[in-house]
Length: 139
Image 1: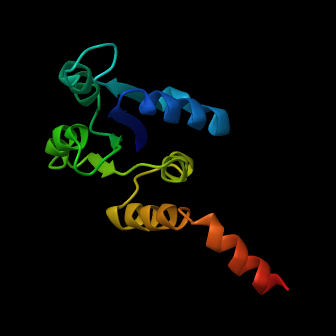
Image 2: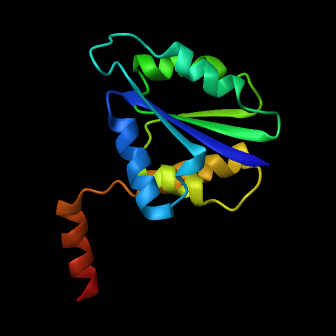
């Protein structure tokens, strides 16, 4: 099964994620970035999203990665969760996006996706206390 990624966020965050993923993986051909509410348009890019959805075949797993749980972008994209080939994840960070892109080929189960999300959450660390605790533990 092939995988595609649609990163869609408020403003240009999506483009930055795509650029960073390309830097680390050189795997940008299956990643689409859509910047919502950009270029003075105070409108959700429904047409662009629909084109991506329409181009997604039954042998493709599409990951839609959004920025904010309560945000309008995620609310609009959540309508696609009933499609078996579409996975919508919000609160995207670079660790999560890289892990999904670099996951070995094939279908990724919802259970495995949840594991990847949990691992990405662990990458969010308050360095002020992390460094103190780890320096103390190293001594």
